[in-house]
Image (cartoon, rainbow, N blue to C red; front, side):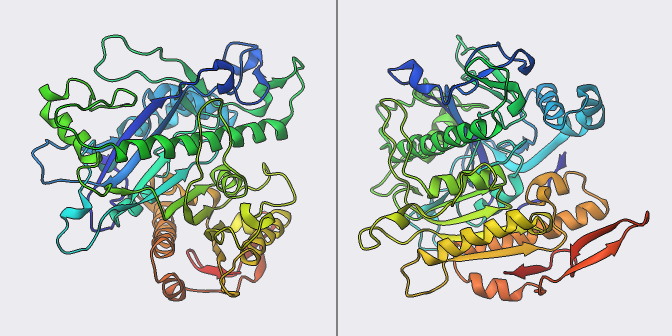
Length: 485
């Protein structure tokens, strides 16, 4: 089995993809924005570009490996169908689908994530050597061209340390390929397999004009992503807060994409074991969703993070969305251009600081390229200052900005370690280790100590000459060094 690197934590990791249809009384309330598809988009021309029909997310979590359930290790890194995902990537990259399929088709069919598919959730209260009532909850938002599995090592690493990580599959047109509504496993009458390819802003028109409004579409996508994030939290909270009842278990409002089934559970003991592991079997939910929730995201997911933390919960027809108790947030190479200026600033900054808690603590991890993007970096520094200014903690620092020397924008994803050999893979593993160490410490404790153990450099910019006589700017330092700004 051709796999990505194993997560280094103390817990085995499971992965399950959940899906929940979004049902609202008013069908029109599920349409986000005014954008409609052009004939060049691959969809039905004139239909709504952004319609919220279902939310889906892959949960990475500490797995119970000692139960009677037969376990299978290895989850597809590329969601199925592979050919459609590769076609979406070709559209994203503006290249030939045939070329992408020829170069990547083989590895994409074979590559696995080294986690247990649909393993039961480990009961935190069963761990005798630790005093745990529940697993902390983390929500992750992917970037342009990303999927729910593109950042599997980052998510698995957090899960292997004792967290439940929900990696959202955004269906706002930023993924290469998604189903608008996925078939339910085990049902005779499957749901319609509608699908959506990657949407470029050029694929979308407003008010019947072929003119493209890129900024408006990105803002519509941000709203769509906010809704997905709040709904993910809402429905997952509903799952883990449901009390276990051996006589009557009703989970028909959600399903999984790759099994197990959630109906006729009395006749399928393995599936029953899986679902029971998520339900509330005592006075304490196994996942801590009522406090100390953690938020993280990469690139456009970083913009999603800031849009969530700087605004009140959005509205969706008759569906009520409650605030999420975020206490920490990690923005990985956040892309700020889709966000309106000035800002973003913590949501409570315009309200009385005496009636609202301080903003979530914030860690921003930047690639070298995004740090050398001068205008963008200057704005990012302003965002970090706003976070620190909004803190009530006696002037104590509440936000940190760190750059990884030589890191590229894709270094926060699995792409750097997809090919398991050569200098790229070596550097990719180094970046993932540094990102993982800093993130784990920040979400837990001892962040300052872990930061001090990194190889720190001062962030000086040097100019180097290329082989063809061209000059480029780069930070002075080696692969994986860190700059604290």
